[in-house]
Length: 224
Length: 224
DNA sequence: CGCTATATATAACG
DNA sequence: CGTTATATATAGCG
Image 1 (cartoon, chains in turn cyan, brown, orange, blue):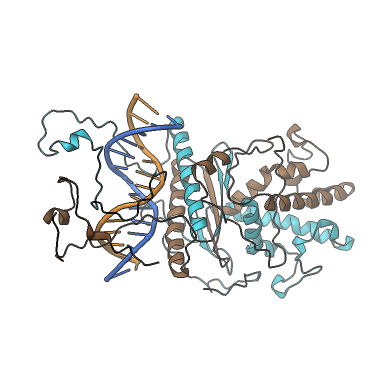
Image 2 (tube, chains in turn blue, red, purple, cyan):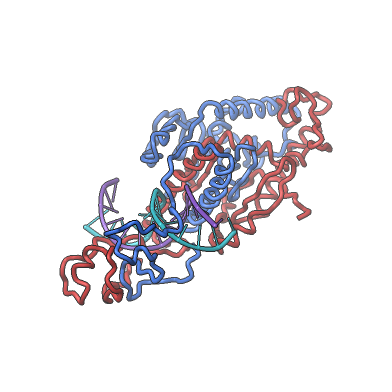
């Protein structure tokens, strides 16, 4: 990324011309005797996407790629005006995050059906706002009337439980697109196949699947 | 945008013969008429990391890059055994997530210092476990003794408040490396350094819908 | 969506 | 951490 020149189209040979060509390349690449290839490095080698064993090497890779990932995220974020958040836990539980994680988490949780399910008997979709148009979980704890505190406690508990449940409910990866309904176990462990159709479909499309949509905090965007 | 600086092929390859030159270029290095070798495509063009205006184009880019991002994440996840979660909200609030988001969110929230700070007077670092080695916020709400319920409520409230605060406190990106206890701002600076104003609008006002609060707690690294 | 020509990301190696 | 040689990701287009 750190190119130094904003080269637009200029009158240059379309192909890379490199003044700093490698010696051996300048020579006739064809016939070669035992002249050793002075290639300074082997360059980027193809690697298999399997867990890197060497602790050390893995660490390095983690650093590099994490940075790369974040960079990509940043670009995507600005190119398309999207909000992106990334949370990463290294093996030692060190947290590396990117973006307004907190904000996104909140947004995510709100849109996630799980929370709704936790609601102590009530249909949020019906708009069961009590106070200032805020949903029960949005209200400050203090505002919860004493008589409802029991329910509130229960709700919180269930919420956490549900969350945890869902956690173990799936492992591998998951690429779920939006959720008018419940996150469907979908494609996960696909990319394990190879780095081919890693996350393939999943995009666009499953709007009325399960149909067990019980929550409706859906965004009001119409959209595009 | 389509534009084109059509003035592309006006120049001749100034280079001396590059042995590895593109075939079509090899054919006629000289001024050419309209012989069919128009290079099927212009190939990947360098783009500026600025918000893409054309709705259509942006959509395409979003799809492609999102996929790429997720793929990278998947690879990183496997290569180094790290847990990665990505949440993405498109402009229209469509959620695209990758990984065990729920799990990570939970983990994230638990490790967040904010929560610790929210503890009604207590130093978690000291290991103030009450019940089964669980921290107060890990215990089911029901397990909170009646006499502590007030404190508990208060704590929850503060927690929420802190979260909210932190949300607005920062924008753009942040790469915080977590610590067992309190977080410490760091890497972010470097990141930003390397990538100039890459990110800028990770967060736009989505304040129009009555409450975009989020969880966030402080960013205590006051020290730093 | 699939292609192609390039822009980028990075595995190896000081 | 900086370099180098390659493996990948993708912008532009049909």
